[in-house]
Image (tube, rainbow, N blue to C red; front, side, top):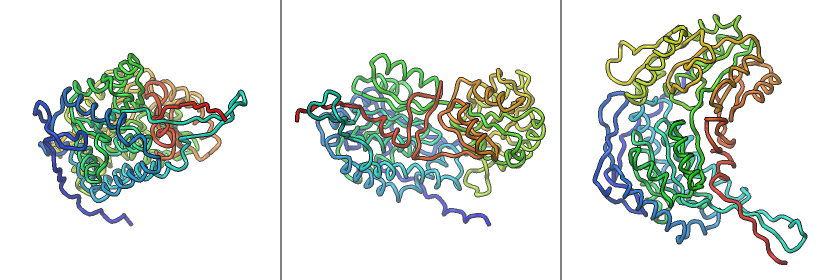
Length: 492
C-alpha cells in the first residue's frame, strides 16, 4: 500500500521580501535593487526579493563583527547557545510546509518528497543542540613538562559567510547555520539568488525568537556582491557549497588572506555493480537516484560501472526503468521527476548530451525534452552506454538526469575506473558480499561510500576528496570546522 499523500502545501508568506535582515532588523537595500524568483515548472515570476550590494555586505559584516567581538553570543556557554538553537527550531517547525512550497516552486522539486527533505534540514538544529554537552569544547590534558595544568579549548572561528546553493537551499543553509551558531560564531547568510525564500523564513524565525542582534544576518545578492563578501576582511571563515569553479575562486581568495574555508563542491560519483547483484534490482535503485531532484544532487550516482559481460543486460534494465519514469508537474503526486531548476541548467545538460554523442557514446535512452510538456525546464532521463573513462561525459559533472554506463573487465578495473575522476565525493557498490563491499569502499577514493543504496547519515562527516572540496560538514566534524584550537597552560 502506498503511503497517504501529504496535505497540500500552503502559500509562502514573507513579511519583508523587499528588505534585508541585518543586526536584528529589516532594512532597505542600499541601492533598492530586486531579484525575481522564477518557477522551474511555470517559468513565471513567483516572488521578488531585495537585491543587496557591496554596501549592504559591509553593513551586514559590521553587524556580525560587532555581535562577535562585543556581544554576548560567543561568551554564552554551549548549553545556552543550544537552547537558542532549540528555540529557532521551534519557530521554524510550523513554517516547514511553507519552506517545502518554496523548494517546489523555485526549482521544481517534488511536492511529495519536499516535506521529508525539509524535515531533514530542520533536524540539524536538534542534532547540534544535542552535541552541546558532549562535544569537547574544553579538555584537560597533562602537560608534557609535568608543571601546572593544561587545557585544550575549542573557540569559535569568528564571523562566517554561509553561502548555500540552489538545489537544496534550506537543508544546506541549516547544515551550516546550526553548527556555526553552536560553536559561537555569528553568520551572514547568502543564499543563491535563484532560491532566496527559505533564508528569508530562517531570518523571520530568528527575529521572532529575539536572537541577539547581528548573530544571524541575511543579504540576498548576485555574484559580484557575493564575491565581495568572500573577500571581506571582516569574514573569518567562508562555508560554501556549490560549483568547482566558484570553489576554486573562494579557495584562492581565502588562501590569499589566510581565512578559513569549507568547500563542498561537485561530484561525478560512481556506482559499481558486482556480478552477484541482480541487474534489475540495481537498475531500479540507480534510476531512482539519478532522477532524484532531476539529477541535481552533487553526490548523485551518475557513473555506473559493471562487468563487460553484463553491460548489455544492465543497459536494457536501466533503459526500461528510465523510460517508465513519470516526468511532469512537481505538484502532481504521481510525478516521479520534475523539471530542471532553470533554463540555463537545462541548456547545460543538453550541451553535455550533445558532447556525449559527439564523443562516440551511444545514446540509449532519453536525451530530449518531453513532448507533452510545453512549459517548464523539463528533460527526459537519459542513458549513455559504451562510455569510455576518458570521455568528458565520464569526467565532468553534468548535474542533471544523465547516467554514463562504463564496462569493466573485473572488480579491480571497476575500482580503477571509479577512481579515474577529478572528483571524489560519493560512491556505492552493489553486492551482497559485505567483505567485498568493504574492500571496494576502501579502494575508492571518496568522502562517503555506501552499499546497495544511496544513503546519508547526519551523524557522519560529509565532504570530498580531490576537487570535490575541502573539509567536512555534518557530524561532530562539521561542528569542529567552525572552531579554532587554543592551548592554555596554567600554573598549579
